[in-house]
Image (cartoon, rainbow over all chains, first blue to last red; front, side):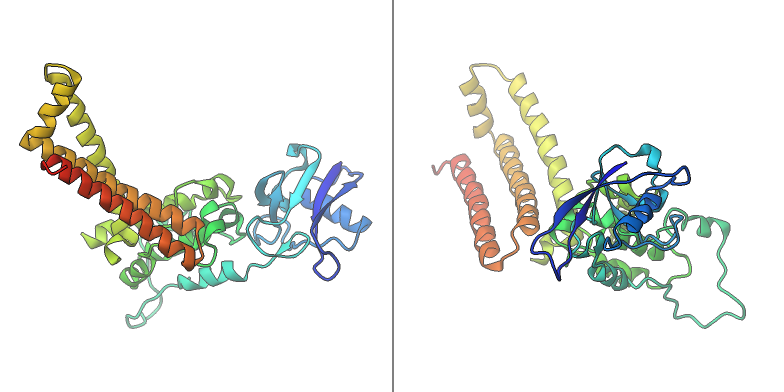
Length: 231
Length: 110
């Protein structure tokens, strides 16, 4: 299999370059991550993140033949050669396929990704009805791989101010949580020309989410909640 | 300006889009239902009270819609304040000038 990979080592390289590899696959190499690990045996200077190998940790998010995805759940059989691998677009490159996600996580932290509940602690636990719990489906599954935010043109334009699809999906996950008491503060925080309203409903986020989630739907829900709560 | 920020701007853009569509349809129907040459039809609309209100409302909606849309494009692409602020000022000036000129023409002070 022919693979072309973005290479950049800031300590050595003046500019990034694409490096081609021909790799002999074995029958056990089912996913793109297997190919990368095989490549690592050939060239140990190649850098990429990976951890769980099963689409749960979100570490190996990268741009695969022009689309963001997770290498560990991207089947080799679906890859068109040459396989072009680049780091997540719009993110500063640390080295090769490794990007700096500091800003991404700072946006995530800004939405207060935890249940806020100032009421007295119950004797055992805060209960939810099955319907209330159902509202969290399609939201809590986000693994923060950044495939969506990195594929969002609005995020490329204003990465320092627009929270991005991943952060906004997480924001809606807590706004809609029946146990959370900070709904109005959360909505007031998002009612800003940059934080929420840079979204142009391009829907790249929904298109590339490796977990099949829909950040654009969550963003629409936030907008609707803002209208309902202000009327 | 807070009135053009966040949710308000987003809502204004959508309501103005609906207003533009409705006023456009009303204008086309009004034109189609009147008799005479093209000039006479336009003249009849531009000199009637409801026609003036309709055209003014149309341009006002266009101005609001245009301002929010172009401002958003500037916010996305122009990041240097030294360029952004003059650019927004020029756009605002043009949009306001268009409103004033339309009002002057319709109210008989060309």
